[in-house]
Length: 581
Image (cartoon, rainbow, N blue to C red; front, top):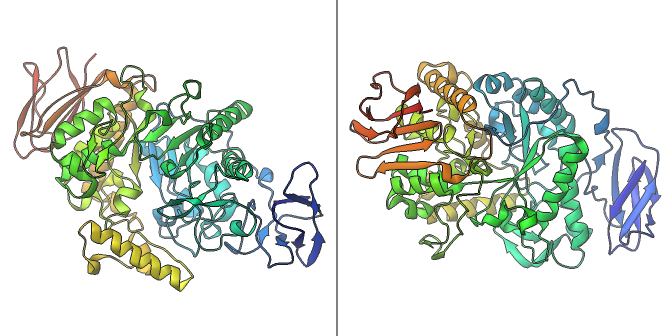
C-alpha cells in the first residue's frame, strides 16, 4: 500500500504503521510530498512523524477510529457491497430535508437514522441533506468545528456507517447531500498547522484562522479541499454537497476556488455518469455565485436564500431584532419581493450592515430552482438562545401557511428535521469539547453573541451540558399525535401537488407574480400553473385571483369556501393552493 503526506517544510518524515517505523522518501516529481510503500490491511493504525516529532494523523485519513489527533486506520471504501444501484438524482425537482445525525434520533447514529428513512420517503422527500459528519472533538456537536475533511465522525458510525446509510437511502429512492466546511477547521486536534501552510494570518473568519487559498503553497491546499469533496461524492455515491459559508473563503486569485471546485464536480459527474451538484451558503447575495463559469461566474449550482427566510419569518412572527429589522418594516412587501426577485437585498441599503448590500438577479434568465427556499434551518433555529422552532410560537394554521409558500413556491424547497409535524423539541447549540479552556471560551462567546440580540445570560443553555444535546433530539412518538399528524399530512399533500404540477427546472424568477395587502396580511402568489393564497391575519380576507378557472388542490382548512366571482374568501390563518391551467 502507498502512503503519502504533503509536508513541504519537513526535512524527513517517518511512517508509523502499527509497531513499525518506516522512513518515507521525498517525491522527486512533487515537491513537498513524501511517500512510502508498506503492506497494510484494513484496520491497521498509522500516523506520520515529521522531523522526529510526535505522531500526527494523516490529513487525508478516511477513518479516525479514536477521533481527531489520534492515528488513522487503513480502510477500503471500494470494498463496500452496495445493495442498491443508484443512477443519481439531480437538483431540479428536489425537495430537500436537512437533518443532524446526532439529534435526528436519541441514539445519534447513522444506523438509527436509517431506520427513520421510510418516514421521509412517505413524506415525498427527494434528498436527505446531512449536516457535517467529519470528525470533531467529543461525541456530540453540530459538526462545523470538524478537523478532518476526508474522514467520518466515529461516534456516528464512521465511514462504514455512512456507506450503509447512503445505501439504505438509495433503497428508498432518496438522494443524499452532505454539508461540508472548507472555510475553516476546528481549533482542537487539528494537525494541519504542523504540516504545511494550510492557513493564513492575512485573513480571519468568525471561527478562527482562514484557509490559505491564495498564498504560497495554496495550490496544494486547494487540491486538498477539492480532493476531499470529490472523494465524498465518488466513494459514498452522494448526489451533492452543501458548502458552508462560502463568503468566508478569502481568495484573491484570478480563478476563485469555487470555480475550480464546481468545474471538478462537473467533470466527476461526467465520469461517473450521474448528476452531481453544489449548493452554497453565501451572505453576499451575489449573482456570480451561481452564474456559469463561461460568463465569469463561480458555477455553483444553487444557493441558500436567507432573504426569503427572513421575509417569511418576520411576516409570520413580527420579530424585528437584528437582521430582521429591514424585513420587518413592511413584511408582506418584503415577502413579495423575495418571491419575485429572489434577493431582498439586491443593491439597496441594509440597516443591519450599515451599507448597501447585494446585487440583482436577472429575473428573466435566472432559474428559480437555483435558490433554496425554507422557513427553518439549523442556523435560524439553533442560533436562537432557546433553540425555539416556529412551532414554539405559532399555531398550526400559520405553520400550514408557511409550508404552502415553501413547498409550492418558486424555489427548491427545504425542510428542517421535524418541521413537517411541527416538532416541539428545541434545537439548541451544543458542544462536547474535551479542552476545558476551549469549552469555557465557547460559553463566553455564545453569551456575548446572544446578549447582542437582547437575550439575557440566564436564559442561555450551557452548550457543554449533555442535557442541551438531549433536549435537541426529535421526539419520534410526537408525529403520531393528532395535531402533528394533520400537519404531516398537509406537508405530504403539498409535496404531491408540487411534484404533479410544477416543472422541475428552467422556470425563471420572472414567471412568479404576487399581490398582497400589508394591513390585512394576505398574499397571493402566482406560480403557474399553481396559485398559492395565504391569509396570515386575524380576520377573514377576500383575496383576488388571476383570471381563469381555479381548482383547489390543497386547502389547509375545511371551512374555506371555494373560489367565486374572481376571488377567494380566506378564513384567518388559511392557505389554499389552486390549479389554474
